[in-house]
Length: 123
Image (cartoon, rainbow, N blue to C red):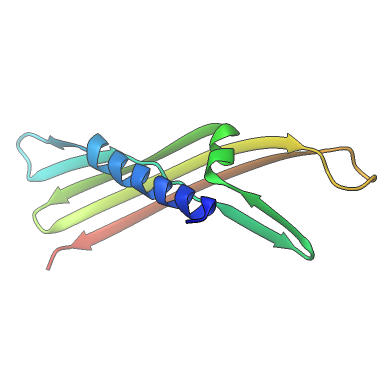
């Protein structure tokens, strides 16, 4: 297996393990609502191509340059109805030398934030 495939596989295993181990259920009193929350890890490699320039940011490199990360899901169930909220935020920053004589280096900062909300009915 290539190094990249191994890192991708390890990232997926970490995500599944974290989701299974860290979930916890809480039941509200006097209502039919049940609440469940979990944290997870999402590991991915990033490949970028701009013209003839290519770059790769592997999961281990991203982890080394991680400034902040939070990923979690909250679910509320009442009978067959579910309300689900998923939130993910990451902040990365890194610097390095640039090829060629024009610039001596580059400082990069990447911030991502995702929120997803769902309503579901179990048939």
